[in-house]
Image (spheres, rainbow, N blue to C red):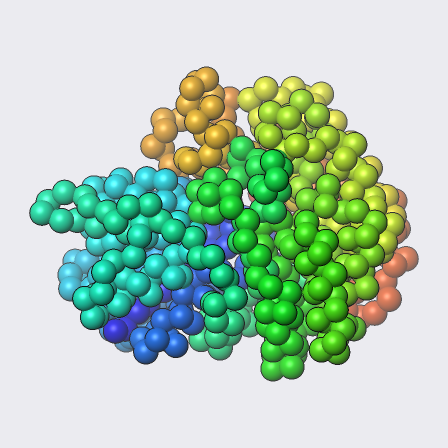
Length: 497
């Protein structure tokens, strides 16, 4: 069969939509964030290895016009078209599917992603989509669907479809126990060079050492706003073996000559020190240490001296760590199971070992006061200026709870939503969707401007050691200007056209 995995162009020409591999969707003036969609890329690879002809067409990150995008798709003449969707754009994808079906009624249309995992029947009732695949391992279930269409094999678990005028399904989705069985991504097929972010050395690419946040195991915190944990992964962390990850790193270094690899597993694998020890040994045995930089997501409470030492020795450079709030009360309400002191300790520990840190913050909680937002800013400023180095950075955004998360259910119960529960287009981070006392634009801009703090600038400049560092800083400045425009010029933010 001929299968197209696609991201149709969205938004207006001045703004860049973040959809693939993004936990939260938004439109932004910054064009420096193009994250590699790993599960769809794995789906494309699995299909190709099993005999399908595959088109991987990302019209968003390739910045294609809609006519150019549709021309490429039509030239491929697909039998099956697959779209990853999210809450803020699901209506636009329903519309796109309807328009595509007018031209090509015979093509099978499939939706995947966190929104349709929570509300699978909704898309079948409100659009002309043929199948909805639920759960996060839709790379595996998509292969099962294609085998069903081609050979009549039974549908895999977690598939929703129409039957005799009603919505039918094959039960709850399943998660793959052994992620080592999945193939290494076919990077050429999925045009890996078109992806990257301002804070990564180039050329860069992405992997996932596992699926699911490690803090979900053993009673750890699962944040109430985290849509992937609550929907795609069922709060069930799974890691690939260190040997399997190191083998993929070896391929990326030897074949693609990448300078940096970002592990976009939700909490990284760094929560498991035994895994880190074995990964360090594998990297050393394969002669990879010193040949590639490695960066990842991490929770601050995972950043122990032993973990930081192992990461530094292995070649880790940057850790993306969630602060989220400078208020212990907010962290408790989010079920983060970390205190502000814990987060400070972990981030400073990482910096003490020479690791760079990207700190994420949010504002706009319904219970948050201006003073608490200010406290988040002060904590972020303290951590950013502590042993500042070139490559340290910070992100700030408005909290947006998606359907399927405990925070969304709490918002419904307590009347916190500013809009109707199905006004999905409002969930695009262009402004608050929850009732809040704080000026979200002001505080987001204020936190982004921490990059202008004299102590941060001096630390960054004095730590420059190479032209790669200079290029990294210049790319970061361009990205920063775009993000500041998102909050300082709100009249341009609306992505709907």
